[in-house]
Image 1 (cartoon, each protein chain N blue to C red):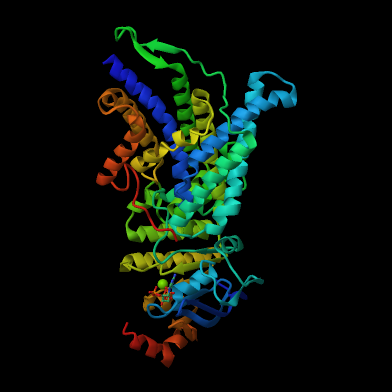
Image 2: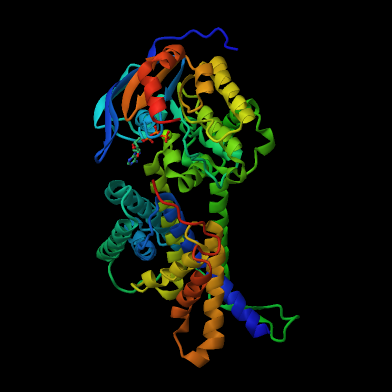
Length: 309
Length: 262
Ligand SMILES: Nc1ncnc2c1ncn2[C@@H]1O[C@H](COP(=O)(O)OP(=O)(O)OP(=O)(O)O)[C@@H](O)[C@H]1O
Ligand SMILES: [Mg+2]
């Protein structure tokens, strides 16, 4: 029982990060109808920026404090994600308005390759590390309930907490501010939103920025755990089955979907892994999503996909 | 019923507008004008090009030919943003509300162009952003009172019956405080009582707020009752233009309506 709980909690914590990346994905889909294949590349790009800037800043400024280096690197990486969002709107989206979904999808594939290429061109293609001082040692909790207690990885716990806080902050932003309202309006009906003067271009830059910030935070967390390398883009694409499961158009769906996939991966790895061989966590999420699709094609919370005007 | 309305100068002038979709000529060389404070109706059989006309004015469709003059400003190519900025608000024939959002939020979106607080101020719910939100909220509550929809303020519009959705659609357009309001069949699918309510709201908007109104409507009784002047379209051509009585007596108009068996 304690072991099961331990796995479950581990899964929930890992899932929170998937939720975060999935939210960026859903926002872009809702606001611009684009199925963004570049989300993984954005995570890689952001993590590369963070890792390298934190390495370079002490040299540039002569200040050797890691806190200072990390803070400046975070701001710089954030600015880069903003520039990326702005360029994508300017150079790509603006010219592809009202194109077929397939065209837009291909465009994001192109953006993904470009980002990976440019990112490695600017920042290098080695393995880099991000050290934001995440505690590595595990702790035991609930020792009075279970014998030996439950092992919790502190790093995962803090990561999940940060992800949850960011998700909460974003939700508040969308519910409580004028821009959030405009964004929900665009997501609901492009044409009506335009008719009341909401500038679509601005909204697109904002959602790509938000997706950029989620990518940055996820990139830092995964990067500090796994190291920053090319495979980070693949890790981030595990959020793909999450949005299929949760529904492409639903933010709550992205959150719940992320948690389900996180838990599913961990449980299957631990309890099914020994029977079907290793590597199950790589395909399990997709299988779960596919099975799910058969019963609810629009996903857990998704609405039927409405044609763009 | 009407107050001391004084019809003013031409506020909107449509000159020689032609619009085609592939081979379909939706509008052929249409010209007419709209005067300040008046209620101008556009009528015609199904497929006559009425909605297309409205879509041209509000920048949804780009005509191949022609010019729009609004408040002295010439627009060869209007777009939705420019139109909204210039003070043109509209409702849609097939209601285009934000279905997942509450009535209040839907109407609040109409204030978007008037919001000045920047993203940062909004994100931190800073003084200017908060004050602005409250001021607009007060205005929106006035509109809600005016349209008598207080009881559904918090309801997601997707759950409302058709007639009320039409009313919210009008509310969102009113929230923009437009100079001119384009209404595409605001009473379609309504029962007699709902139609009376809607006619009253339209007249009150025109009368109390002085808003100029362009209205597409199939119900002849309503059109004859509330409009000052009427444009008649048929197969994308203008076949009549004038006072309700003049239009009703126009043989070409009678022919079009009899021919289309309405
Ligand atoms: N987006 C479009 N693409 C292709 N054809 C269109 C489009 N919009 C309108 N049309 C065509 O233009 C013509 C005029 O249509 P429009 O909707 O303006 O008529 P209407 O007078 O509003 O009719 P109704 O009373 O049925 O609303 C029709 O033949 C219609 O099929
Ligand atoms: Mg129509």
